Length: 355
Image (tube, rainbow, N blue to C red; front, side):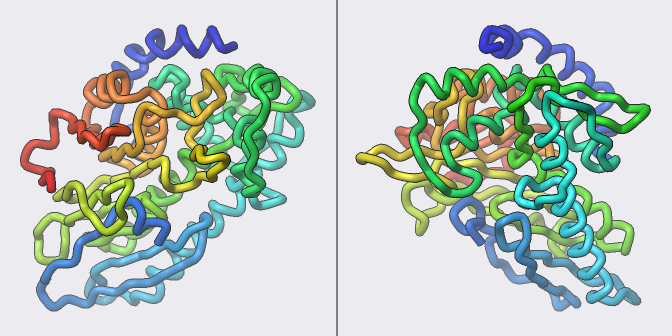
């Protein structure tokens, strides 16, 4: 299965990217302080509200301009209820979630899941294919071996990593759309959607905001930021990318309206052992932390896309990662190497300010 990953990092990517080019619209259906900053700026006096929720293992900030005739509390309640509902069904930390039921029956039988879970796993499979397996939602056995889920950190033996790698192959996920079932055919397989679920949930929240007539908003969830429209004054939002080794410094500022921005960094979740830092972004080929980059910021149309691609690009490294970004329409990125060199994709001219 390791060979399958290596072969698929090139094969399959072009076909799916061509699909994206033609059908892109069909796909669109603070911990944060260590990653991205929404920079303060003056704006006209409007009824702008900010609300906070602890969810998805982070602090979620919802900030929006309240449309005339709309109750801010009603908007907040609808958005936060949806975030909590989705978290209950797709989180590995929720005992009765679809994801836990699916993982517990791996190798035994298909599991009927909610339409939201089914759609999320379809997206995970799609981005795994696009990235040639650099983003792989079946990475769960390795995440568990390293102790990142329960924060029982350890460095697994190489023999254990090799055994766990045999369980990692997104191409083994079985879908039955008619019955809305998913099946992991090998006992011990574990679906881990942490690299996509948060972005997926933010996209649903943005859809809800639109249904209430909101046209200016942002949602910040631990480094995943979804933007709706521009600031109330019509100017773009300003987002600062912080220095991965100095939280007091900003390396670049992005000026954006609409879309989403997600940063993955080696400093978000990690542990030190004998002077070596081990972070949670694992390479599905090796089973070890990816080392080619220290930070990846992806700008995309949806938070789900930015979420998955930030992980994929981090794993691919600077050369293959930048190539992937440039191949996908509407996606841009800022990569930071271990030498703290910034690599910026070609479409960010006039959007990014390097500090």
